[in-house]
Image (cartoon, rainbow, N blue to C red; front, side, top):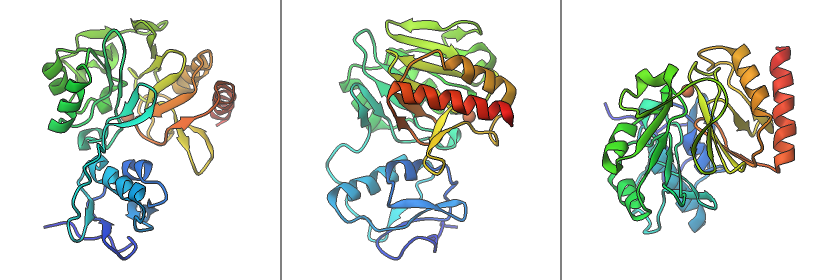
Length: 285
Ligand SMILES: [Fe+2]
């Protein structure tokens, strides 16, 4: 049966259907237009300006269940919708996969080989864009949940695939297995930091002491206006996650780009202070 318009969506052209799995991805790319109501994403305002129309289209292309729709099948704008540039040399891929519960993935352009951090679903227009951007040298998997179609992108571009040994069953095609201990250098300016907690083999990737790709280990909450970790979605050990995040506080970064949850951009000192405060809160409860 075809999913229906969620009646919690405001009246008008754009809506989200009832097949929404509440991954939150559409809310992250269309804030102010899409919000959570009764455990699903809905339009709370219709797009008006060209920028808002573009945001609605981002929601269409990010949604892993194709639930973001327009009543009269609006024509797609000609502008590139995804990848979406986040900061210099870093893009959000879009085309989130249902198999990773709608987790975000990222592309980073690097002089000695581009990076794909976690994976989108396999999409011809992304392949074309990656190809035109110089291909993919390394696929950096944060943990077992968010591998999506990494195998297909690896094959397409001959990329090396990195994952922690403890989560490697999810990516038997991986070429490089990470172990516990200190950070591993992937390439110049790119480090893998083991982060047991969310899963046993979770890893975060740090780019130039500037951008942290955090997988499901750390995110921003607009409701809390603060950094958060996901206690209700902690599959291995909250105690270990607390320890891991405590060690992460030795690293510096300004951008926090998570798989699930909201991204953050803060001065490095503030990010560090908020991370230390989060670790203290986690340790207390
Ligand atoms: Fe996860």
